[in-house]
Structures are given as structure tokens and as C-alpha cells.
Length: 214
Image (cartoon, rainbow, N blue to C red; front, side, top):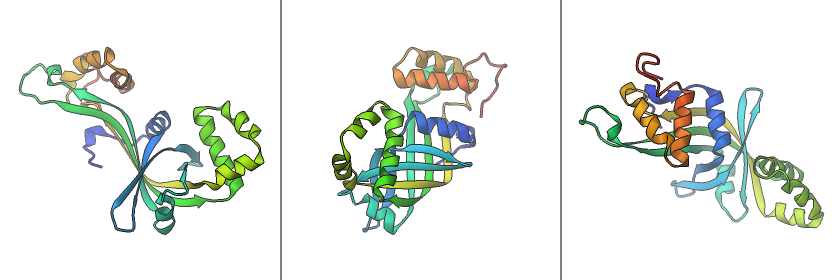
């Protein structure tokens, strides 16, 4: 993605935080016609000795797993909080509206997970992310039911081969930070989350204390 230097983050911990807090991703492959094919799905992030791996699955009727099998190289995108930016935050009038957002893009290499036991382990990790108590219910449904459900999905591991993290929060305009954060702090859920990220990046303090953030 387009990465102006003032919005680029090379901090893997920041990227991991975004991926874990906003796990509903877009998996993008090339279909048989050479066009992008997108599946929206939750992914579980693992750090394996410094290498990021994303775990997920799709329904067997979804052709996406076949595209991954034939062409393992793919892209995964995560979109964090995002919100409108009004030009009213600037002290001068010669400004235009914009949009702020946090995003992570991953280039990945896919490996299919088709063994039932391996798929079951993968599902338990996703359950652990979103509703841990359901694991007991899943076990109680019986082996026959579980086997039927597992046969209807194809799991995959997506090894992250390259990662880009973008934090677009108007870092290059420090004169706007205090007004931007104040407006976001009393806004909707996304806006309040962006205000917290501005705090984490040291933005919104009086000029002279932080200067231009990176």
C-alpha cells in the first residue's frame, strides 16, 4: 500500500496488536481468470519464534482454498479503527477533509490444513480468541457431529512473508493534533479508539513537547 514515511510503522508489536484487536480480515488471492478473489474472515495470529503465522478456514464450497492450493502467494489486510477528519482542526482555512485509519497488510504463503485433528486444533484457537466457553460445548456435541462439521471446511496456515503497517493520524501536522484528539475523544467508538492511539503515539500534547510524530 501507499506508505508516506510519516504514517509508516516498522514496529511488529504495533502490527500484532492491530491484527489481534481487529482480527476480521480480507484474504485476497488470484482466481482462475486472473482477477482478485476476496474472502472476509477472522484470523488467529501466532508468533512462532519471530515469524507471524495466520490461521483460518473457509467453507469447502468456497473456491478460495483451491486458489490457495494452486497459487499459495496471497495478501491479507486488516483494517483497524477509522474516521473522518474535518478541516476544522486546523488554525488556517486553506485545508481539506481527509480520513484517518490504521491498517496492516501482509504478504503470505499458504499451506492447507486438511487433517481433521489439525483442523480441530485450529478451530479451538479461533474459539479461544472469541468465545472460550464454547470449547466445552463443541466437545460435548460428539465425535460424529464434529467430524461432519470439520468435513465441511478447509483450514489454512498463512505464513507472513512481508508486513506493512500504516498509522494514518495526521502525524505530519502537529498544529492539528490537540483539536483532532479532542474531537475524536467525544465521538463514536472508532473515533475514541483513534484518540487512544494518538495518546499512545504521544500526539495531542501542546506543541513543543512532542514535535512531529513518526
